Amino acid sequence: MKKSSLSISGFLILTSLFFNLANAELVEKIVAIVNSEIILDSDFKLLQKKIKTSSMIDDSLVETGDTHSLVDNKKSQLDYLINEKILDSEVKRLNLNVTMEKVQQEIKEMAKRNNITTDEVLNAIKSQGMGVADYQAFLKTRMERQSLLEMEIISKIRVTEEDAFTEFLKKNPQAKNSISEYKIAHILFNTKKSGPQAAQERANLVYNRLKKGEKFEALAEQFSEDADFSQGGLLGTFKAGDFSKEIEDSIKNIDVGEVTPVMKTKQGLHIFKILEKKSVKDPKFEKEKATITSSLVEKNFKRQLKIWLQSKKDEAFIRVNK
Image (cartoon, rainbow, N blue to C red; front, side, top):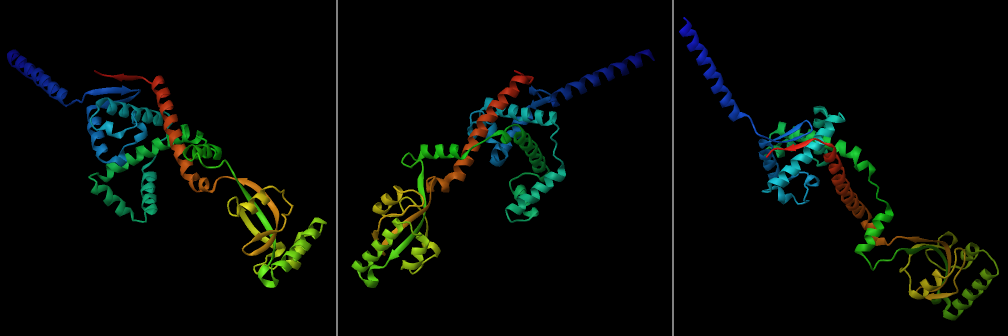
């Protein structure tokens, strides 16, 4: 009986040893530890799959700034994975968990933004070789990280109009710092109606009465021969460059409330009055302002994210196994 017991005992020990050795082959190698997060060999394989679907790679987490370096550069891949774990560690620390209900809602919003159905979104995901559950997990993580970055970085970025205009001037050195904008009224004397000489006499008469202090609006009402006459002789708002050089030189040298001498144009003779005068940005800048501002925000975000990540790495426990 003793011999039998020993045999059974030995068999159990050998079986246990064999089982442990077999398990050892199945246990993945831990490549690195970031705080309480671990990076496994399988994370590199998963990253390779994500690289093939570029929309699943966050280029702001790529140390070199070049996503192509992730394809075959092991160090770039490790740096990227460490950056991800830093974010995930902070998400856990700050309890920024996103529920699956919110993930489902985001997918619905995504469909709405693209004018398609939720099923069409899910089918598009499947067509890229990704399971719906995998995508939901990816989206959940992305939303949690976005919440973290909004709180830690994005909410603190400030880009003023002056910042955007300075950037505009760098790319457009020929542009002016500002352009004058005028709100103008006028009194028109039609030279074709009664001839140039009679029109000139009427214009001179009105100009002299203005100089004596009579109201421009009243004289415009009485004498203006503008077929499209507006109350008070209002002509509209114009920017520098909209007039001939002669008229513009005359306008820019008088103050608000003053009038120009009698001036000749193709339409006839005019007396202009400056109602408002202000400096505005170059019209080209106004068209490009939103794009420039967005670009500056993105540039500032990437710079601040790099600084933030480095500060978190300095505070973190990071061990890379050889």
